[in-house]
Length: 74
Image 1 (cartoon, rainbow, N blue to C red):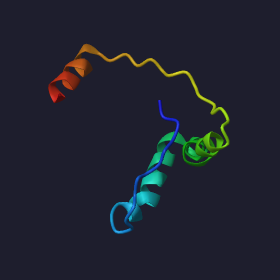
Image 2 (cartoon, rainbow, N blue to C red):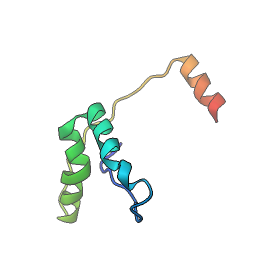
Image 3 (spheres, rainbow, N blue to C red):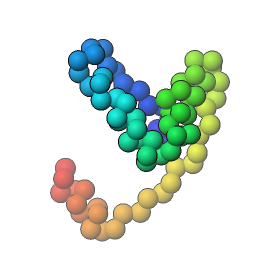
Image 4 (cartoon, rainbow, N blue to C red):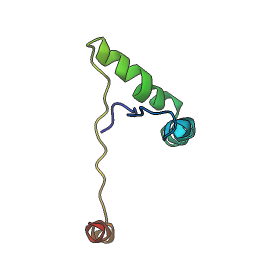
């Protein structure tokens, strides 16, 4: 489960210029509202010592073929 999204960027000449593009791609996947929760709302709530809203995880069932592929990649 993901409750926060952040980076550990310390130097502007590394991945830093790619962050806007990365955030845009993440927004396309999870939506603007969820991205704001992960990058702004949830971190702010933690700093205020407040609870963050969390959803129950989805149970994902893999086929035997998908399980085999994952094992082979290890």
